[in-house]
Length: 229
Image (cartoon, rainbow, N blue to C red):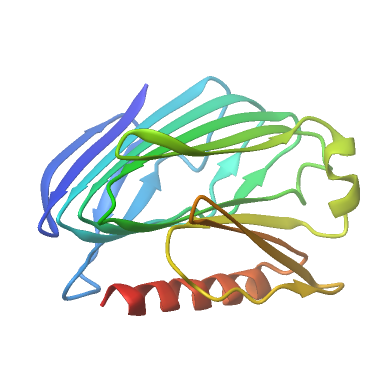
């Protein structure tokens, strides 16, 4: 088991428990916000890897980001992420997971937040190396004041799951509880759609260019940061 558990209070790291192959690297990028990279040692997730991540924010602003794209190799892997926000704001950014052939990846993320907290959660994947021969189950649950208000599942089992998306090698899901204007786009390079459920904004991105997708995502993150200042 690989474990990372941190607690932030007033933008200061109060608890940092690390076990196994996962690390937190704090980088002083902002004066009014905690910033850190989430690092997986060893170059990626292999068969039977299990990770438990637990982040608690109290009266804090934070930006947590993967340091690079996570490689998901052949075999079964499991990742559980728990985030608790109390009067806090958070950008949680996972760069696109790189799926390899015969990977079987299960990820469950749960966010508990109160009415004073804001967040943006970003996750996604790259299917180019897998020849569309992988399995992935990405789950996200949101609780406000411990009441379930949102339950999202991305499930990929076989090539039929992505038949309509085969021209796009990158996919991203953005989930946030902030009022941001989203411009929908439909062309051969990128598709961007959005919806709103229980005041949760869901943005789906398909693209054949990671740079193009990230340019759009960075614009959303920048607008989110401006609203938190």
